[in-house]
Length: 467
Image 1 (cartoon, one colour):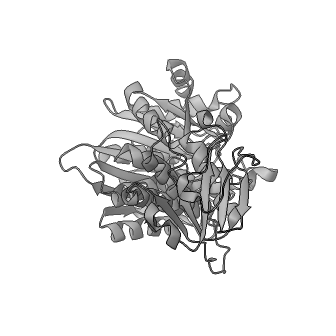
Image 2 (cartoon, one colour):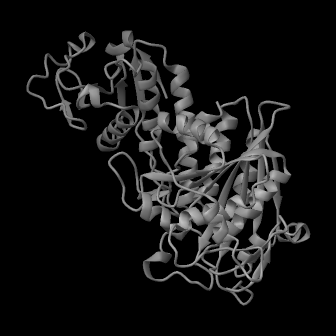
């Protein structure tokens, strides 16, 4: 992304986008473009094309007191998608107390990358995107570079999630992780069915039994603070989830390629952390498989022995994500993780409770969750804490034939029960956050500032957290 000093304004030959709050005057630098805004409605999102004497797009920001970084980012993104042409955005005018020029530049730079993303159809060449530049009186190069890197990694996660499941197989996801590791000189370990059988990872292997593709347990490590403890970002990588023998029906099967968005997002969050050269030790641990029907597919009343040694009675083959995650969590701890953040499109109950704009959050450490929330508030990615207590654990541990069951049927609170199941695999002393992104992982309809499909939710937040 090119950035200009305000002294270079006269030399810019592309259209300039000038964002203005209601009641604001035209900045003196733009006196040659437009003399006043008295007759213009500057409600947020309104876009005016001023043709003379120079090319100017005037963008309404609405009331200054209602502005947030998220609202600014979305307003800029919508304007970029709508304009569909090269633009140079002035980032000084949105700045105010509590929202600096540098912050406005970062949000505009992120929006430039994020809003222009569209999945390239299979067999087609990507379309050339308009070039977006920024102009300011401040030195904004560094913040724009960081924001562009964040947008690149978020879009990478979106691309992985949007890729059809016959292409984005467990093997392909593992190859993607290996390619990132090679490019960024990271440690990478990928376990296949043979190694998983030898180590006793029976939960992920049970889910995998109905698939013609092998399972993969993947770990990519970034060391930015030698000698310090590792945090593991653990992702659910169901590249397609048919529900197993509790097969999904009707429209519930559509969109199940997105059941690997937890894996895509933690992998690309690690990519962002590594590209940013963060001073932290972080690993991404991913359990990847399909959940399909086959001659050896697992069924209700089976008992699986997890990597931890705990046994699990299967009461619902469509509650497979927690089975994949429990082995991934156990492996992350064996690899030395002292903190764990797992991310998964885990339960429809979370969508019912929180809708599409919130991620459900569960934890055994309020301090750890508050730290994450601080950064999610900065990026505008919404979290909502849901309950998890001994009553949920008691229900999970009810089984006549095993240590626990994988799904408590017909009692409600499905998200909390799934979280309680996962917490059974957290070692004593390990801080843990579970993020249920079943609603926030993808949108079935596009928005003015973004294409439909995978969202890359929380990639940017996790990148910020480990800066």
